[in-house]
Image 1 (cartoon, rainbow, N blue to C red):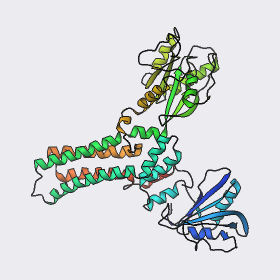
Image 2 (cartoon, rainbow, N blue to C red):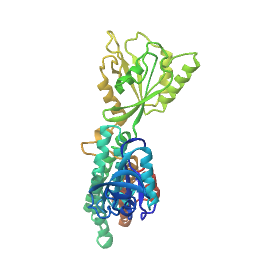
Image 3 (cartoon, rainbow, N blue to C red):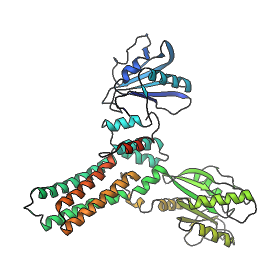
Image 4 (cartoon, rainbow, N blue to C red):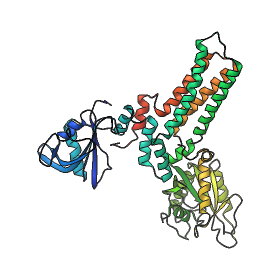
Length: 455
């Protein structure tokens, strides 16, 4: 990527719509757009003269050919999203007209932007730190309100502030240690070493609290796979439809209706969950149904959680099939769900969540059980206003905690202060990686390649 290039891209989704937005950013953004834009009176060079953040209407041309009537807005750096001069051109949202407007900009000095390049420039120009830049994509791709709220808190600097607090505390301890290194005749007193150890352990516990939010952050950002398994006609498809709030899966009293996996995403207490309805587990000679059963078991053993549905109203079940299914699910977190609990005389096995797909009874309790199973200790660790961290953040924070642990051991064992300081500097660097104070080109390429074009 060349930061001196002027880049352009369509910022709205592909396809036909009322309006499309094309963004241009870089040192020549206004000049590039001005070569294509004319006022309603036919005047050229209008955009370089208008007041910034004011929209103006005019014609957009390729040579002497009018492509569309557009509205253009100029944002001057550094008071723009990217920190550079930026022009946003709003045209009619047809596929052809949008492509032609973009091509005109490219023919007049622009370069096609890469995925995430606008946000990358915002990061490189100091408009966002790395964690905030990551949250831009998370806002776009959020599938539940809880995921969106998490992304917005990160975008507003919630994680940045937490990291700044950690760094400030680490810097104070490091400064204290380095002061003793500079004056070697003054050995660090035992009570001073003990006080520094307490402070470092407090920092390490703060990191541990942040790390415990990583599981929630992972589920919010990536979703979780939950398989629904059980014998035929226990209500697996009915449960899927209830969780989704629509008839996604066919429900029939005929055994073997579901012959393949049926997948759909639902919000469970704000968590995006991909539910997989599977074929009823039973002995069969039908080759198609056999394949469906095999796929169902494969989906179950690769899922993060399994809902094992049983018929609470049934007098008996296929014991051997249930045992075989239980063996397949060994090691996979499983919630036993007793459906048809509304039927008189229904029995609920020990540890099962009793529900009724017919009446909706028990679905709230099932949702709470799913949340608890997916998040584990993370749910209790996240308080109002916290930002659940991502996997990349967790890796850096784990490294920081390990370095702090070695520094604590060094202070307790009389290790040389220069080695203790070295561990603290490594801890500082690892914490800084969360917000991008220490990055590599490969890391940036990995992060921003996941963005959509125009963002």
